[in-house]
Length: 162
Image (cartoon, rainbow, N blue to C red; front, side, top):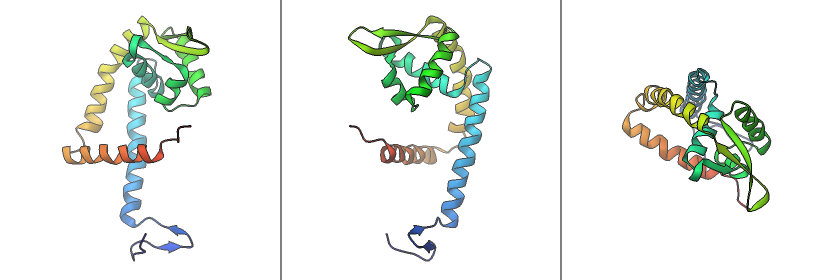
């Protein structure tokens, strides 16, 4: 990388420029506020954003079940955290766990009818909030650029597959 005057350098660190720092901090503040707002909206349904995401992934899967290990990757949670979250959802009657018939060690998370009903109710408010506080706040060109930018970030930071 070529050193420029607007990128101060100390030892091996290329510090962020003022514009880069402003953008980074705007991202941090905006994403934190949006997550808080979306999480608060889902609390009315007894869910948090992580639980909602699990229900969505299960609802979009074939036969509304997913192996726990695959679900952990899909919702970007550790297996341990996912186990605790699924236990809460299971106590609430929103999901159940079953053994995988083809692999004794495998466990499926299965969306229950109650879970699907709650998801259908919560999704309407959640999508309205996403639309009002994210989609409609960003102009179409910036929205497309944001999608490309975070697809690049997600790809760059994806864990290596064994």
